[in-house]
Image (cartoon, rainbow, N blue to C red; front, side):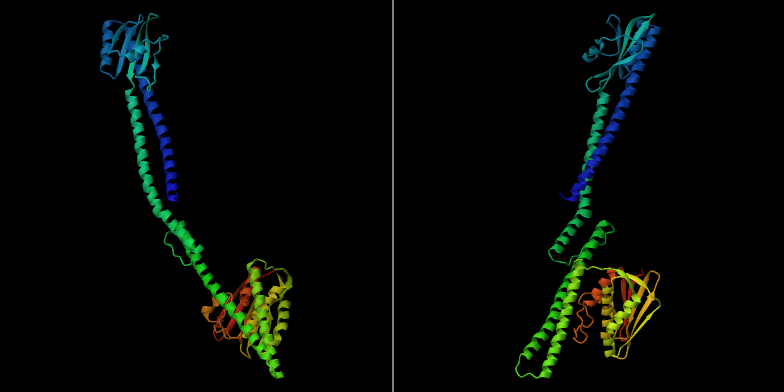
Amino acid sequence: MRISIKLGLIILVIMLIIEFLLFFILYQGLLDSRIKEETQELVSRGNNHRDVLEKKFDDVTLHHVALMESKAKTKVVVMGSDKKILINSSNIDSKMKEILNKSITPSHHGFLIQNDWKEKAYFASVSPIVINGKHVALVYMFLDTKFIQKMNDHLVDEFIKISLISLIILIITVSFLSKTITRPLIKMKEATKKLSEGYHKVSLDIDRKDELGELAFQINSLSDDLNRLQRDRKEFLANISHELRTPLTYITGYTNILRRPNIEEEEKVKYLTIINEESKNLTKLIEDLFELAKMDQTRFVIQKEKVAISHLIKKVLNTIKPAFFSKNISLIFSSDGDYILDIDEKRISQVLLNLLDNAMKFSLENTTVNINLIGHKEFIQIQIKDEGEGIPENDLPLIWDRLYRVEKSRSREKGGSGLGLAIVKEIVEQHDGKITVSSQVGKGTTISVFLKRG
């Protein structure tokens, strides 16, 4: 069942319940009030006639009472103590006779002897006439119940009319809900079905300023994300294929050369060196892929301990200095203090080595790479600033993506699989830190790692 129909039925049920309660309250209130008013008036009129007749009980007065009631909606019958009808303002029918034949206990106060309007034709009251302590007659008053029955029928008719109006409102409501809620939901269902079937480019109306508009916006965002992920996945697989194929091609090619007879020793050393370098590249690529796989499967464990960050940076610099010196690149470290951080020493070393390795690869000879340790109120900042080639502005947001490289030609000279910065970013974020980059083409790049102070 469609949601619009469900909502329409819920609204109908609620409206009918409200109508029923209102009808019941009005029905009971109006009928009871009217019945009470009319029956009190009936008893009062009977008592008035009784009072007049008690003062002067003769034919003239009896005739006068009958004449008064002949013009009213009520009827009067005065019956003597011997059950003889003394006067009546109108013909006495069988229903009135049933009431007149009832045995009653005389009382000077008037009272109702019949108030059932559903089954009986009349409301009836009786007022005994007492003269000198003796009951001489009874004044019976009758009021036709048809006016109450008509009032009841009118209220029921009004309730039926209101119910029909409610049904019309329901149809309009269902139509409105179908247009404003159900149709957009159906479109969203179709869109999500397309997404689940692999079609990741869907577009929904996001101009609505309500929850459905927000949901449509989120589905569009999901579509864009899935589309981008599908594109990235294809590019990732293509890049991985290339990165794996290149070293394997070198290894296979130079291995075949080494199998040739009469190859000179000098060439043999040269080719073995190339095979060794490509094996290292292949091993590094596979290690990086394993690192990323562990991150994706939440098996990437950070083991924190108290570490003097200045000492750690110096240890990393001592490891990498020979490579920098071989390219005539100066390494300068400065610190405004010594800080103890709660970090994973091995992982932060990995971050620093990766960033410094990138700085070296993209720096020219006779330039300087500065490593600055700066303390802030809540963070410490490790700033690595080179004077290298720089990164184009459009590429800056993308350098953290897996296998993304600014060098589109995939130059073997500057190597790298494009996985290092993705791993670096993940490690820093696992430490609740952040990493930023700024760069100018031809002037150099500055990368800052922010880690929480212990």
